[in-house]
Structure formats: structure tokens, C-alpha cells
Amino acid sequence: MRKDARTLAFFWECSRRYPRLLIGTFGYNALAIVADSTVPLIIAMGLNHLAYGHHGWHWFIVPGIAVAVLQALGVIGWNRGIKNLWRLEIKVREDLAERTFSHIAHQSEQFHLDNFGGALVADQTKFISAYERLMDEAVFSYFTTLMTVLFIVVALVWTLWWFVLALLIMSALYMVVGVRTRQREIPQSEKAASTHSRQTAQIADTVTNIGTVRSFGHEGHEDDLYEVRTDRYVREERELLALNMAGFFASETVNRITLLVVLGFAVFAVITWDAKVGTILIVVTYTQSLLNRLHQVQRSLKNVVKSLGDARSMMAILDTEPTVTDVRHPRPFRLTHGAVEFRDVHFAYPGRETLFDHFNLMIPPGQRVGLVGASGSGKTTLSKLVLRFIDLDGGQILIDGQDISQVAQSELRQQVTYVPQEPLLFHRTITENIAYGRLGAERTEVIAAAELSRAAEFIDELPEGYETMVGERGTKLSGGQRQRIALARAFLKRTPLLILDEATSALDSHSEALIQAALSDLMEGQTAIVIAHRLSTVAGLDRIVVLDQGRVIEDGAHADLLAADGVYASLWARQSGGFIAGR
Image 1: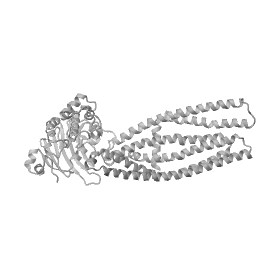
Image 2 (image 1 turned 120 degrees about the vertical axis):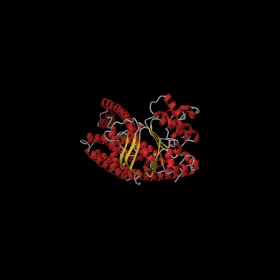
Image 3 (image 1 turned 45 degrees about the vertical axis):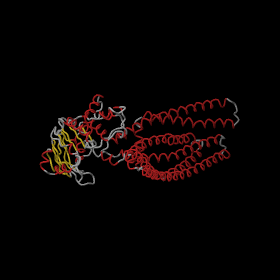
Image 4 (image 1 turned 30 degrees about the horizontal axis):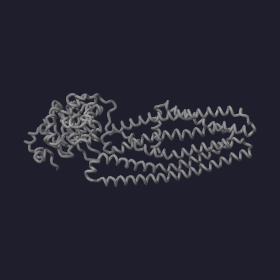
């Protein structure tokens, strides 16, 4: 319940950012409710005139005009109120979409490793829809009901106090029954929302990996898995429906009893207390109106429970802080030479043994350094530490003498060129994907970068050339083509510090030979950290550092390491096709 209260408070704060629309929504709806609720009083007055022998038309001209004016005010009120509500919801939905997207995008690497992308998309969609449903219910169910009750109390408490008292008692009973039954639905609604997220997540997971599914011939397995999750979701929804119907039956029973009791009071008052005949119309009309409102509130509780359940996952995500954060006042960062120093570095992945302990390594400006070693030796981890995808447990990493923990992550990454092992492309054009290396680059610069990476040779053969859409994650291109697009980004960005993490691993021998010279040109005069299993990639570099379980065990030029006849020489001798053999 505390989490749900926080969700409601969060949505309310989002709505309060637009006070004019918020006031307009409730103000115009209040006008409409008062106007509509006043009409029965005027009609009852006309009936009383008829009942007491006043049959002239002049007795009904003023009431008739009043009814017409009130009806017009009601239409205007509802129209303007709904318009303000829609505009408010559009504004807040836009804010929520941008806020949730930004929060997810700025999360640390571990968050994205722990959360499936498809589920995050589903959670965001449900979160935004939850706000819209809750706002609709707040205005059209709860606010209208509250206004109706207030009007009845203010208008009739002095003349029909017995009716007001009876209606309030029965309404309270009605709401107690409704709330109690709906409270039983909250845990079940949360379970249903959770199973629905898992069902939705599998769709995205299967579609993203459809190539793997087809290559193994496991379409049937995926069908069966989805059917299991769908069946589970259906079971949860059926249990939720059963609880909902039980609550509906209880509330409807109270509804019918309330109407009969109040109508009996009205007839008794007319016969015994000589109440005016219009009293029956007032009692029946307002009772039916209020019960309809309460019935709407009771039905809305299902939407409220579901919406709160849908919002819980994203609210939990919004409460999740990035594991890598900037200091309160980041220092300006200027990368000019590209000197990198690992000073007494300590690091361990959560739940694992320490990887780096008192690790020290100095890379002078302009030096091209290869990092090699078996899997798990810490090569890629070093690149992640330099880019602050993950943070140190102790020690420092200095770039041009600047402690990277004291600078903004975005500023650091904008000035370091990084090509990951797995090139990930957007479902956009080739031009847009290459230009991502430096936003705002001219088309001629994009083409030049593609030529340097040897991507131009296959781009020119495509029917739509640089305007070709590459598909989700670049699936319309081969692995080598995707890698060359990623390298083109690096050529376009071109900063004093370059990190290549297995950047040529997806290239065939022909493609690799074509771009080795270009890579040498790219690294010329820059500091380059090249992570590789293919030793031919690093053989021509200035220096090769051999890592083993987070320790530097060899350090030197290719020829010197071969002459030393140590671990590197052993790896070189055992490599097959230029790759480090498995251990």
C-alpha cells in the first residue's frame, strides 16, 4: 500500500506541473456537475406547482428557461473539462515518456545486464497507460462522485435531512463493501501484471534472437514456451476476474437495497408527513444518480488496482540509482595527449573474487598498446573501467593526469573513441549509424569515414546506398559489415585516445587485410588500447601487455616477447588462424 501511495503521489506531482490545465479540468467538471444536479430541483418545483393546482404556463416559463440554461452550462462544462483533461494527459504522458526513457538510458551497465530490454519497454508502456487510466478515474469517477455527494448534502440537508442521512449511511456501506472486496484483488493484480510482463518480454526476446531460433530449428520450443507463459497469465487473470465478480455482486446487492429503502422513505414521507409530491422525484433522481456514481467508483477500483499493479515495476526502476554516478561538481575534462595510468587499481565484480589488486600500468601518450590474455584475464574489464561503464573499488585511473572519477561520464566518453567487440547498430540508415560517431557530421565526412574503414565498397553496392535501413541491431548486414560500420564511426570521431575491443574479430582475412593499413593510420599519433584474441592484430603495435587473472605477466614489443620465450611466445606458437587457443 505504501508503494501504491507513492505512485499516486508521483503522478499527482507530475500533474501539478500544469496548474492551469489541472484547475480547468476540475473546475469545468465541477460546473457541469452542479448544473446537471440542479435540474431535478427545478423540475420538482414545477411538479409541486402542478400538484397544488397551479396550471398556468407562466408558472413554468422561468423554470423552463433555467433548465435550458443549466443544460447548456452542463454541456459546456463537460466539453471544456474533458478538453482540459486530454491536454493535461498528453502533456504528462510526454513528460513520463521522456523521464522514464532518460532514467533507463542513464543507468549503469549492470542495470542493463540485469534487466531485459523487452520487459523495460513493456514496463514503460504500462506505466504511462497507468497514469492515463488513473487520471480518468480520478476525474470521472471519484471527483464526480464527491461533487455529487457535496451537492446533495448542501442542497437538501435543511429540507430533507432524513434523506441525506439515509443516503450517506447507505453510501458509506456501499463503499466499505467495494473497498474491502477490491483490497483482496491487489495481490492478485500484481501477480497478473508480473506474468504479463514476462509474456511480453518473451516476444521481444524471441524476435531479437529470431536468427538463433531458426538456426536451431527451435520455433516449436519458443511456441511452447510462449504458450506456457500465456496460460499462466490467463490463469492469473481468471482468478482476478473471479475476485472482481464477487465484489461486483456484493456491491450491486447493496445498490438495489439502498434504492428500495430510500424510495420507501420517500413514499412514507409523502403519505405520513405531508411532504410535497416533488420529494419523490428528488429522492429517486438523486438516489439513482448517486448510486450510479458509486457504481462507477466500484467498477473503477478494478482499473485502479490494475493500474497501480502495472506501475509498480517502473516505479521500482525510477527508484533505482545508477551504480556509477558523477560527483556533485564534476571537473572539466580535456583529453589532449591520451596518456593513461592505472594507479593501484582494485576491482572485483559483485559476488566474485578480486580481479585487480594493486594493479598498475602506465601508457604514455601516442603509444599503441595491445592487451592479450586468456578469457577472464581482465582485458575488457580494463576498457570498461577506463570508460567508467563500471567503477573502481579503489585506486585511480588517470587520463592526461586527470582522475576520471572526478569528471562527468558523458564528457569522458565523448572524448574517447571506443569500438566494442559486438558492433550494435540502430534500426536507422547507414548514414545515421556512421554519423553517430560525431553528431552533426557532414555527409562528405561520413563517406570519407566509410572509405577509410573499407565499408564504402559494400555500401555502394546496396540499392539504396547510404540510405539503406540496416534492420534491428543491424541484422540486415553481415557481421563483418557491421564491424566496418562501427569502425567508420571511430574514423569519424577520431580522438586522442582510441580503445578497440576485438574490433576486427568479425572480419574475414580479406577484410582484415584491407583495413589493417587504415587502422594504422587511425592510430598514428594517438594513444591506442587494442584488446585482441587475434594476435596478428597486435603484432605490429608498439607494445603488448599480457594479462593473467588481473596481473601483468609480460610487457614488451612483439619481437622482444617472442625472444623471451614466455607466455606470449607460447600463445603465438599455439594460435590457430591468428587466434589465441583456448586453455
